[in-house]
Length: 147
Image 1: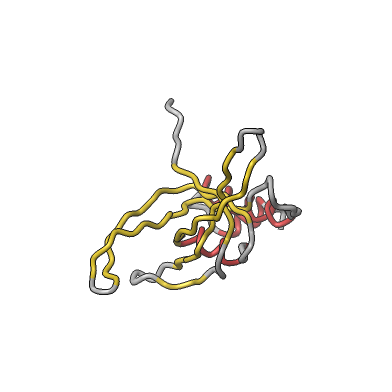
Image 2 (image 1 turned 60 degrees about the vertical axis):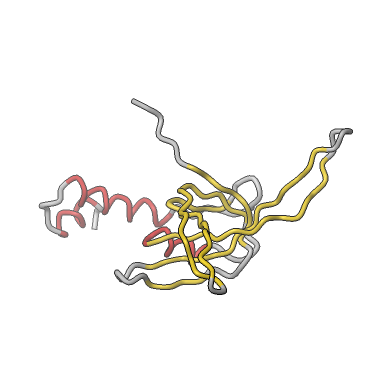
């Protein structure tokens, strides 16, 4: 089986995350992101350059989770794709880009945090039970959970 890959991007959250609702009623995250840039010097050291800034969006569950967990200044890693579109600005049609994040989270190399998995075991068992036995009632799911 072939290895599945997608584009990725990393950087920092440069603006407060904003929530909106699409015309189909889905949750949408919009955030301005920054990417640091460096130049390697002849002596092997690095000089920090000005960061570049870009737009990033996410939809549905990814948007909801990011809105609850990400804040301005956080370092992140995202997987997704670049969406290129045209927009009218000052009477001229220009090409613009945004990164559409399908998966999004904190950058482990730059973020200290603890993971709380207490909810995971009970919630995941219930979801797995429903997925494995979609015709069973909720009573069967409760039995599987030991309730």
